[in-house]
Length: 405
Image: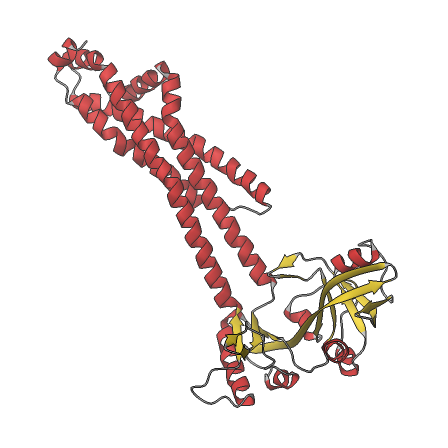
């Protein structure tokens, strides 16, 4: 028999047992679909985390004050007041550093008429808008003049507008709100961006840092200093520059621990991306086990098929079929089962990934490589697990096969 004739005979044998063939393919279908779906979800999670970290700001470095130590109990990062406004002036704008913005946060009760809400109150400067890519839906952002004068002006997030005024589209510019009983005039509303990191910029009020320090905090310290590097390539240089400048300002000697910490956005992104990629590979590997199970199922069914068709094998050999012809016939059957199962699995994998993305409210991303690997693996399994039954069929003695009942 030639190769095409072997394919026709193999397909005819599979059609003769449609239910058994379908059940045999089920393992491959589930395996391929699971691998593609898991990798798609993992890639989507990686993209989502990357987007959130990048949404924190452009080439961002976050300087936090040190940790307090009281009674042998060490506080968390930022629990000690080691950063001041003078430290902001020490950071030189230049080749590596593009912009610097101090941040002082507190929580406050905000009231307007009968409406009230509790939200985060952030004091900062005009450079925060550039560093965090803040856009305005209406009105304006705080200015250098507002900071210098300690103006009682506020920029609201869209969630605050809804909670306080009952309507996201309410006209709020010029209205006077009270934050912890201190009156502030609303000068702008930011564009909705959603939650980025641990804080939602939509549910936040921004005011001049000088006003927040004097009116609400009663101290001149800052919680964080945000720095935007001139480019991604300059982030490490900017971090080294800032470390040296702050160590000189805080009179930290060589060998002493810094009383501040600097978080590098690039390092954070690299770490989180590495974690999600590892989890994606783990999930894909676990799903890949079902491909092996499917391969074992194919081998099992093919062995049963060889036993059932023993007399057929004997007749074919008696009329001149070679061992290679018999082996090729059963091997093709195993490969066809794997390829058909892999093809159906690809379709279901795409569908499952899309449905999972909608259920988890996140985008999914299926790479062509994952599809090729899953499909190629399924075809390889068909060959590997089909060889043993095919060799068993090819090695049968025609006399013994004809006698088989």
